[in-house]
Length: 418
Figure 1 (cartoon, helix red, strand yellow):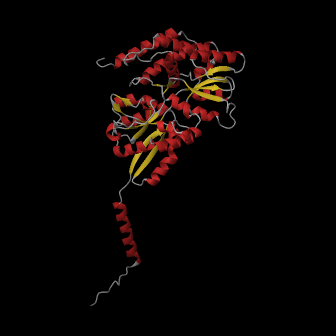
Figure 2: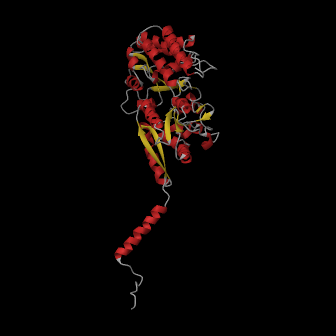
């Protein structure tokens, strides 16, 4: 008997099965993309979302998965630390505040970046942007953007900004006394990190230091300079130049008061400039900005978390996030301060961002908060004493003496052999 010939044809069902099998083999053989997981605060996640989407479309072999973390800085840190303490964090990269670096590095939660990025990863960045990324002789953080304290002043009320703290206080008091503005100077006086930033700027202007020069295990908050700095801030409130309510004021409240034309001066961060220029702003076109001379650095940067399954790919993503191209985009769209000197010097970018020359000058000399794993505790001690002083409790001498006493106890307890 002759066997039937297939004649090169298959039944429709058999053909479908073969096609599905072929597709399955192709999918199985196709390499799955490596996914790098990044945890960052909500505003930065939102700002970078279009860029990340474009990256993922163009790089099929490498994908970026961003977790939109809490808006609050400390809440974000708590989330990251909780995942690290579990021993198997789901994140490869963390966008970190500059003050976290020593704590995370000392705890063993980060991978050093030199093996992945080389020894010159910070080359080409502005001097101020290069600070706060190293600890214990290693690079742990690659900065995404810079931030620093700035002085905002009303150009319709004076011809030039003050050149010293004494001139600032005198001008503010004069304008207030003449009824030109209800308040002379607004700043961040609430008991939180913003108060530490304000104090550090004043302290540096008076020539003082938070920790003793040459020995970061010794507090220097009872020095004459520190007492003078605290006294200057307290004096602004007692004289009425700064409202009593400053004890409950953060950046947003300061911006509201100044933006409503209720104050002659304001201390704030670079983001405030764009807010003050928005349509409908009472002071739009009547605001000048100058460097404080020693503006507190408040930058954000990427770190590689311990245990990342994809360190090489994570390093590539880190470089992409912090590249000049990405920095330019974020500067143009959101006014973020670029860390690259080439962008700060770019005439075309300066035309788009009138504040850029001021930011460039400010980055030449920034005040760095103490590089110690104990920073959060030390800052809390300082905030509590300053808050009491601002609220009218005690003298600057007493406040700084107590801050010195408590800080010394913290530092001694953490000293080797203690």
